[in-house]
Length: 291
Image (cartoon, rainbow, N blue to C red; front, side, top):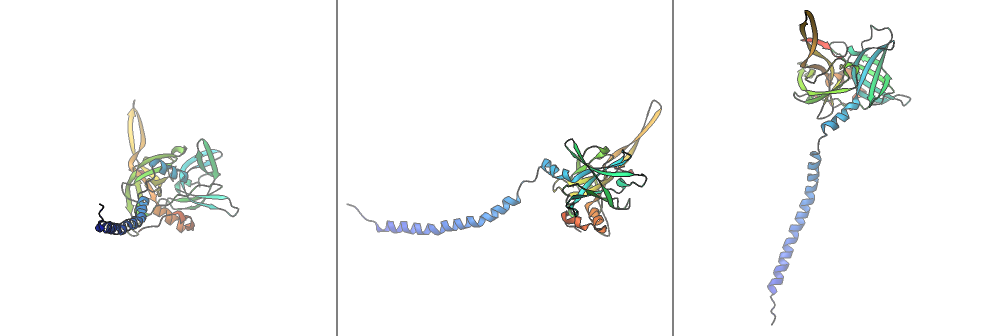
């Protein structure tokens, strides 16, 4: 004989009704958490590798050559800080380098060339100096390079100038193709009145012809400074009664003009429009490396 238990059905119904709001709440909670999880994933996106960052930095850099009568008189380096189109639609690049690197007053018929190395091929363009600072206080110059199309470097803000910052220096020492050296930001000198950086140093080694080269942050890829020169120590020695001497670059004594100086130089010479790529601003024996 079958028996009927009315309490069992009621209990099952009660359990079913009680569980429904919990499931809905769980679904709602998960949907609300989705944007939060998405934000966390975006915030923790992997940084570019060292190689990827270097690949981004390289296209901003060029090498310079001053010729007279077909002969090379001096070499230097430069960084593209602006890229525009002229009235005819042609490409124009704006390159920052050192003022001492483009000093041509002692030459009769100098020609200033900007060169870009592309896996064995060399792209050459003639440049003109459109602005030049007074050495040694403002050892910067701006070049206009018609017919050259390269991406402009982004200027770092003052807050990025921290001791120990990993950097890479891109330059063309000895007139050769672009080369890299690595190190860290070893010193920052701040102006007491303006509270802005006046000069920076790096322990990355450079050589003759690196003046005007760029010092870039490996973390952000931004331009931290423009190389001005390096300090040397004189070494003397004798061989078979003959005396010899030469200068040796001192580690940590590569000095440069910070991006704040570059920004001020462009603004004061009427080229503030080139700063659209720039980040906002926050509050031994010296030897030039490029001549």
